[in-house]
Image (cartoon, rainbow, N blue to C red; front, side, top):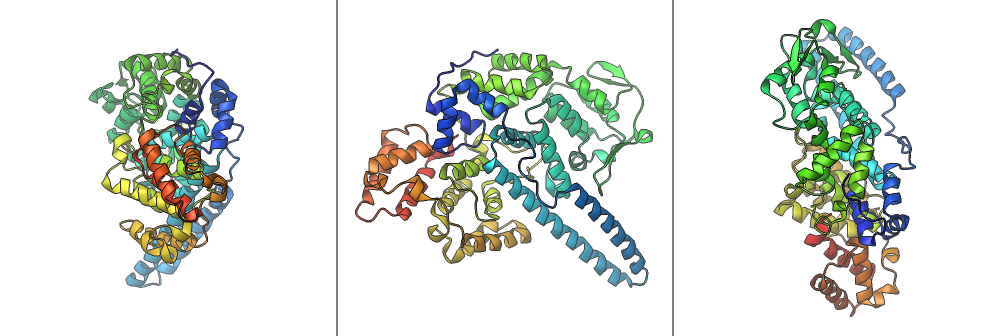
Length: 517
């Protein structure tokens, strides 16, 4: 066991837990967590009172409705074939092209609603750690909708990740190798006896369970034979194991020999010491710091294995460890784009964003839900920040803090700025940009009468102190505080309206310190 932190803790430590084990929160939310004490607070995150189905899924993701659509589509295909016999080749090609375009349009719309639904869930959930773990697992078992092209399968995987987010990681791995979205993404359905997909076996070992260097090329070749025979029906997502396509011969994987199938290979992987160390190491990097100390990984691995690869006790040990609250750890991570957006909304207490804006912002910042860049997921840490994305963060903070009326670039509904953000995103993004531009007109932005009451605005130092507590939860230092106070005082010659408060918030969110989590 890692050395534990004392139950007594500071508000800054509570805010650190709320940011890392979730997506940040308002001052009231942080105060409630702090009042619980450290252990009860961690337990509340690990055992949320919100069931998985508390937030309704997108309306189109309904099993009965999807099944009915499949039946209708089959009927349409039959009718199309019949009608096609009386068409010329050109007419048939045109009809097929129109059908494909309609299917693609529906898929794009559904994927956008799925992405908006998940982002909204992160904002509203009473189970923030569960959603943070879903985001972690979406990166760990990275699968992109750009290749899968089936929103229903992406949603199915998202729900699978949520089901096991605080549960049995070994069982989740068994499930994920038979997950239809993952199979389509890694072309597992083409892996047959005599033509095994070695790439899939490599990713399972390197990225999902053991980490690089803990297996040999021969292990990959042998494991690939075991994973043959699994097929997925693209139409309905049904996964089957076709025995005549499975290599039933003897294989030797990591020193064990037998007529293994895919499930048995996964069991062999979890017998390796590397499997006990790999995920705790990644979780430490995700939640704590970039370089996990060897001794820490060994301690976590021992508990992880002893628990049967359960995630909840592993996370509990991390969040109760003294090391998690070390001063060198607090605010040592660069916020991911999703963290940046959701945390900003929570701290500004805005219940939502203009419809579609979160998708433009994700694209602008470099992290789009359901579209990780490759099977290795996103590059975290410093990779999130460059000249362009830093400028984008400042601009997006300007839009969100100032609302529809005054945000720079949103004059006239913001269509110009939205069009710029959509550049390079294809025709789908341009449609979203126009929609966002219209939605901007009705979006109110933060309630500054609540965030900065008029009485508080009479004293610039108190106003700045209140906003620092909201956005930083700790003293940023005399120089930074002085700059904020000077700015606030410079506005005293005019009425301190919501516009000036918004500018002050924007100034705070445009600092390097605010980019850290």
